[in-house]
Length: 427
Image (tube, rainbow, N blue to C red; front, side, top):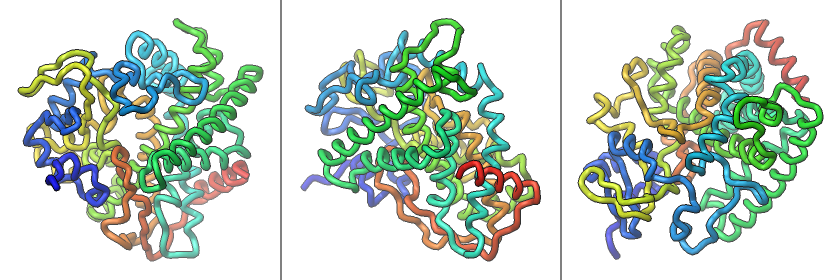
């Protein structure tokens, strides 16, 4: 049996806990052709070049042969167009502009930043639920429920319907996990969940069209700027994109962040006493332990000359963001976690025209969750290191993150009152 390639070893779930030595090996060949004809790109400069190269397409319809014999996706949820993140200009640019205006920076800065106090209330309430014990799973207790609750609020989902969104987010994540069953069965489950989600979002959009609120769906349906209106189908695809792409990445970002802090207790202590540290700390976490390890599903629309070899037209491309984030030619001492790092142009959110749409929300959620966990958990320590990881090849993070602590620091009276009001409203 042939020795597995470095890239194949990276894909092996057995190496999920610490893939970084393999990334270092991979960077020795910046652009590596694989046995299946695909090209894996692992060095910072080359990844950045391809992120900004219009010949590196994200549209799955560009090259049907990349589907591996499966039907080429012509739609996202059943009956809906592909989300704009999978399109190329001019359609991508038009739809992204429409989606950005009511979502956040630079057009509507107050929406995401204005969620900070509310997110702090939710985080306080979640951590209050740890009281009475001395062990908690940070993933199930905070990292998972916080992002879903935030997305539901952003989309204008009724509070009584939020448990359904929790179910759909978990089911969609499980359908992409090879450890949860055979491919055909996972596809069947995903189709069922997609149909349920699409039907629900359509009803939600219908209600908001008749009675608009201050939520994102209402904003997309009522925007009167240039290139408007966004079609109903594109509104629903954008809402589904936020649920699926914006949820799992932030779960891993929070879990990876807390894991890293527990492994660096000096930084954890600094965060308790230096609130302003959180901003550069989150950027360093996005470089050091990014939730998105690689970008797949891209293909070369033409021959591309880069770092020596020519990538032939039609070749599948995999951009190894996590490897680029530890490239010593771009970052000094790249394997060191350094929250005071300057010039930190990481690849944690990708780059180019497909830069992560949900990045502003993910940053705020992380900036709220980590300081609250650091402040409230007294003497926290890992139960298992490394923790069990999800086998997902693209989105890397612990499935569980068990933490023991001596006691739970009390919230301030104001925090407790806000959290109590939020729990009542959630009911």
